[in-house]
View 1 (spheres, rainbow, N blue to C red):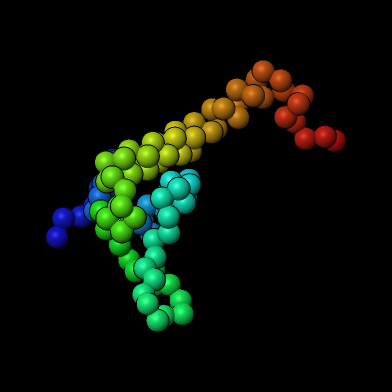
View 2 (cartoon, helix red, strand yellow):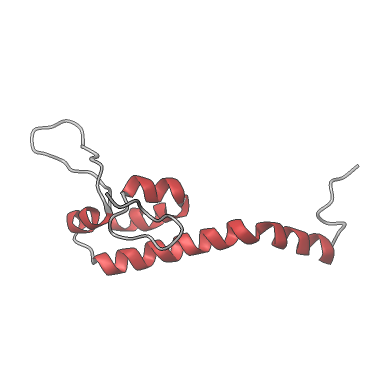
Length: 104
């Protein structure tokens, strides 16, 4: 079985759980398209089966390409912020050192 490459783009083979655990900011995209649950007639509670993104797109009736584009945009933004947050923090201190320093 081919091992997933988590360094690149999110693909249709990724599980919904994997996407949410790796990139929590993608939850907004999933909220826009509906829950990853199946509700069967006669059951009291919804079922949340493990599903990949292709299955999720089919369940919600959304275009797989549009879903992947939105998820990858959110993930790319999150990766950028994680990678550059220390630079942004450092720049803020250089611009206005008194504002970001703790009070005595």
